[in-house]
Image 1 (cartoon, helix red, strand yellow):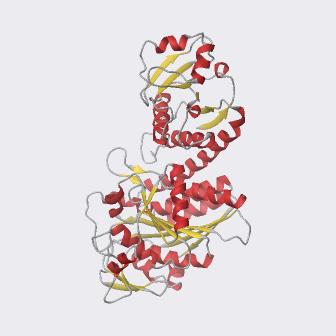
Image 2 (tube, helix red, strand yellow):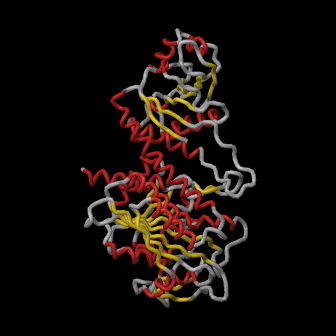
Image 3 (cartoon, one colour):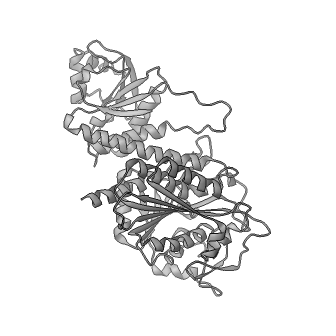
Length: 500
């Protein structure tokens, strides 16, 4: 679906459906009053009947009014607060789209961007509305015999009352569409079953992205090359599967040749049985989502290439399948990582940190400005933070603050957890430099502590997206596309700094 922006006289715009916000008590804002004047008071008369209380998200569909060029008028309640929150704005946009999808209207004009929203200018409001609309249109029916009906709605226009703000609104729409495209790509990959989406497939998807966007250069390291690099931890995870591992290296060169890149590292366990430390059978099908860290890096690169940002970025996808077999790693095995540090593997289901630690060591060769790894790493993160925010840790306060700020603006938030030295003691092993688990306490933090041992050469942050990357169970089960909005905003912020 196409989204664009327009500045015009509200009463003279021709559209199949005009969407207008109405506060509690039927109160109209300046825009609503202008439309009411064009309709010679017909709108205010209808509201006096009390058919729309104005509660946030309530809707009332009206036929076209005399004096208004729109064929239909869709009123949406905005509540009693003069300044809305991001969450309320998203709720309004979702409520509007739910109605629009039931109509025969091919286009619609939405005026929600004229509402006051805390901390958001015209650009920010346009982007949040557009992202919400596009994300709500996502459908994954690739394996359904009966496909979803093609939507009648083809175009949505965001109304801009102030002509001076039109360029900002258009920029917000453009950024939203790039982010939505990236998030949809991530969701598609996450929703694919493990028998199709394996490490080789992930590498092929990256290569295809490189063909679609010439600004991307893709390199794929095979099992033989991983062994040659000494990635003993990475290979320990992959050795139980018939599917060979892949380390995918993605290069985006939008800045100057000698500018140090930012690096995004994604955990890509395309299916996680737990290995010999076998997971319970209930909901194990959802372990196809254990590659969502790598998928989010792919989605972010999709957005990055569309936006053509003036920075350099490296993406590293650590892809493997964790399976039990006669070749699989056993609890108690000791392996040597690429860094030379040895790891006693006490639990083969703590595998994500093993593929990541070698990949984080590999990232050193790019001399990055900063490295962010993204992983569905611990169930403990879901216990601690639920499914609303991602867990965040790091070795540099400035980088952590940048990510928190990006997540706040993108409405894809994270929450910082500590990496105090005391937690490192939980990883002590009598036989190796460290164990791969730290016991039942503070599981998310000790996982971060493990990774921190491999990131001393650069500024690093770790995002645990176990609770945010997908929705579990029920008819709404599926990948969310997070944290593509947060990561893209982080890169947008860095590009703005580079431009300044």
